[in-house]
Length: 309
Image (cartoon, rainbow, N blue to C red; front, top):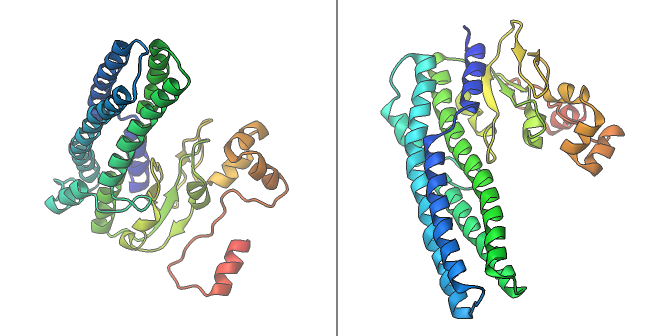
């Protein structure tokens, strides 16, 4: 098995991962919500400003600890996942320096360190629950209606926020480890591989299939730049291969832009939105198509000409 096949297999398997930390965090958040609901039901709809403020304070004290614990648990999950990745490539134990880098997570995602992203996620969860209760009280809704709305909102928040947090931390940790393995193996040509489905971001659609003829340390900042990124760098190969997509296997050399052209208009419109879809049909908006990077410096004219192709 070559490194290209290994990277694909590894990515596929990790997409199926359900981290233990996520399960534990869900349990804690459900218990927190139960305590909050109990307090709401005690009021029987008789809210005062003082009572409401006490309830808001309770929300923060119940929700925040679950996210703090999530970050600590994720560090262990990420080390385990990274050890699997490193062992697959190098066949050796994960270096201590790599473990420290994973735990610290000093790399920025959307301008934030991961601990800051977790706190922002926790704060948003608290804010959203407060908003549901505040609106309900302002409109004079009875307690049981507010509780129902609170359950629905909390369920959506847990599903989306925890998935993103867990996936991002582990995928970023694996990227750190994989890149160190690539460096030790002396690989100097990489291909940007995005996921072929309707959830892929514009950035990843544009970069899919792009080749970098450089050492990994020079390009690692080009990937996993957004929350919940599923893209990876994979060593370049000349052999025939397949790659998975939302609608079945395709030729391994198929880029996102080429794959997107094969899909029906309903799918294209759903992914791009009305305005971009109309521009796409008129040829004014291009999906994918960035040229390969050959490892040389470009002039402004060369850059402009490349983007115009």
